[in-house]
Length: 400
Image 1 (cartoon, helix red, strand yellow):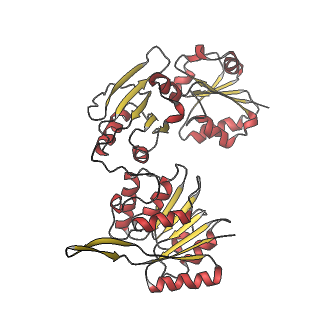
Image 2 (cartoon, helix red, strand yellow; image 1 turned 45 degrees about the horizontal axis):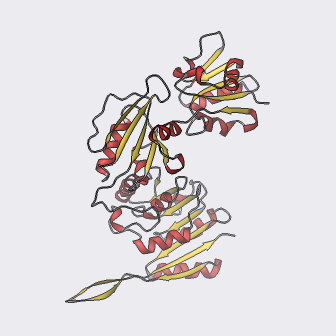
Image 3 (cartoon, helix red, strand yellow; image 1 turned 30 degrees about the horizontal axis):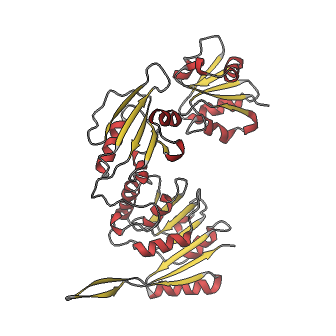
């Protein structure tokens, strides 16, 4: 029985609804929504629930009324960064009727003549501005659900500081309604402050000529990270990420994270990849947080502590990387024990003692050992020669 309906409403209000959507609104015994949405329905004596903070409190009220005809009024497409997603986590789909209106992303693309399939859609509603850093690429088109009137100016500032000052920007207000307006400009010259609270930001990214653009694939330059020398170097990091095999939605433990380079690159492979960086040194933890924000993954969870003790309260990982702490007893064993079936363990060693630990563990448990040796051409007098970095022994194993 579909007792709960979720109806997307645009700027046109009830007049923009289809007959089937209007019948769900009219037939509900309880209306739920924000003040802006509830105001479009004339007062008629029906029970009304306004969203509370946290949102889960109102969802609890909805669930307690299971079986009652309830209509939730939402903005645009409720399943695109909308309240429908939160409701679907608690209520089975077969109990809900979801009627979307055009999303802000669809409307913005229609106004600008952009193909929806070619844009990156993001939300900054209640989320860190630094999320944008992961998506700034020359020629990229971004459509951003705003957090309010201050968001466009903040976005312009981030573009300027990140080397994308010539990016074109559009702020689209109240799309589909009588107050619709589009404000256009560039990040470099953006000064518009009289922006409506309800707005959507569109960006066509243009990088400064001298900017070294960072790719999304693993193996960022070492210079992309603030570090004190505790860094998995570029080539070794690329090989390490290949062995860890990031999969969307999965969780990584980065044990002895240093500057967080492996965890950060894991998360950059897909927006649903998650990671926990475990690091005992406070200065390094600050570097990890700074690097995560600068590279577009501010959601990286940084945990203070030392393995294996710091691992006990963490959520179960799909993959684990041990880049430091091999000399501590039980670190590799603890990571291996915690992994889900099919989970991947990768551990790197540069010392003879660390290599001995990995060789012994591989002899007991299995996995593959690889020696990684990198040499770079450097000046030798008036000529050039190969200067070898310290070789790295890598253990990679999959839990069957």
